Amino acid sequence: QTGGRIKRLAPYLDNKTFMLTWGDGVSDVNLRDLLNFHKAHGKLATLTAVRPQARYGYIKFDDDGIEELTENPQIEEWCINGAFFCAGAWRV
Image (cartoon, rainbow, N blue to C red; front, side, top):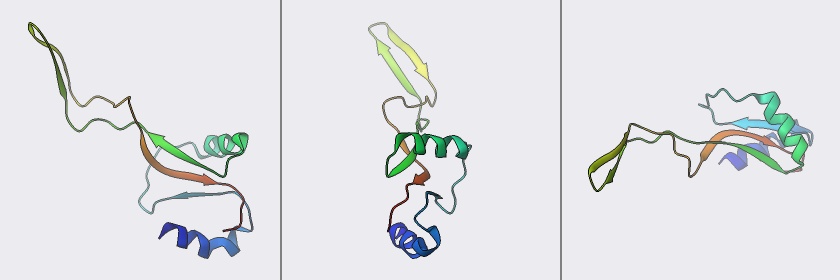
């Protein structure tokens, strides 16, 4: 669906770089930095990524019992889509 909406906007984009987010996107993304990053790397599109906070805390055990108890840590192993995009100048 999103791709179709972008295609319908093509006549208004005039083959220029544009930004996109979901209708309910709220973030503290620095859009100027995002645009500068996008232009500096010369890729077709740039998307933001977020390291989410875990939904649950975790307990790490050792032989003596609880070694570590952490409540809702930030996940370091992977990212989720931050839903702010900068897309290059191309014909859709």
